[in-house]
Length: 182
Image 1 (spheres, rainbow, N blue to C red):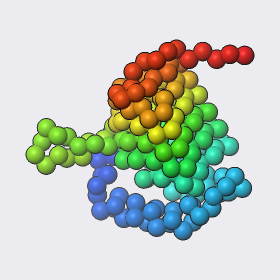
Image 2: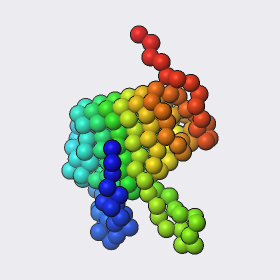
Image 3: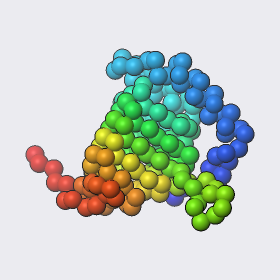
Image 4: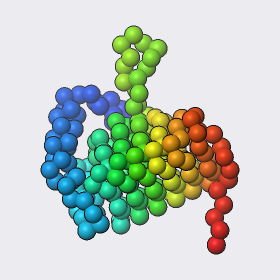
């Protein structure tokens, strides 16, 4: 999926900073306190009101940290656990049936260390359908996790992951093909 990077050039603009401040204040009062499965539809509605595209029957935990809901596209039947952090300076796309486990970190931004002032850089993250980002895994800017793939616990994924594979470690390396059993 092609992304218009110009949409995110204003990531550090005053308007964007004010929007993020408003979201953080709002989420502390009217998102995070509403934990539990009874409020999952409410949390999806709140994210939609703040510009996220959220599919049907998603379970976004109240303890998930979302930096900018307007840079978030979530498919159907997606689960994002407590403690997961979606640092979406650029677009984060989660396909259908994706699982983002507790304390995982999806980071779309970094800094250009080849320049003295280390300006902000950012690239979108795509997690394709049926993929699983396990607990405490880190997904770095510009990475695509292929359909059905698994990023193992505490792995650091710096490169694209082929569909239906399992990766793990730091940096994440191929472990095996993922095969589903009946």
